[in-house]
Image (tube, helix red, strand yellow):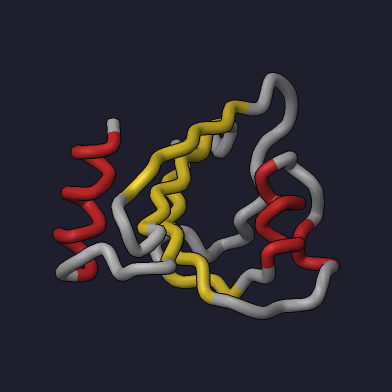
Length: 92
């Protein structure tokens, strides 16, 4: 849940930073959770693909630079790497 995801972010980064998103994925790459600190608090969203998997490349456990458009493509399982980059999204 939210508390477990937040605890993991604090363990890795020392704190959840305002206006940052933190992504969590399972080993099979068919489930993803996004923890967002919006400046007022945190919220958690989850996504599970019924078919296929999220395409991370070999960057799991590090930081990726993604635009909002790339994040939207990633969330629906599309090839997000083909779109232009922007902000930082952290993948745990």
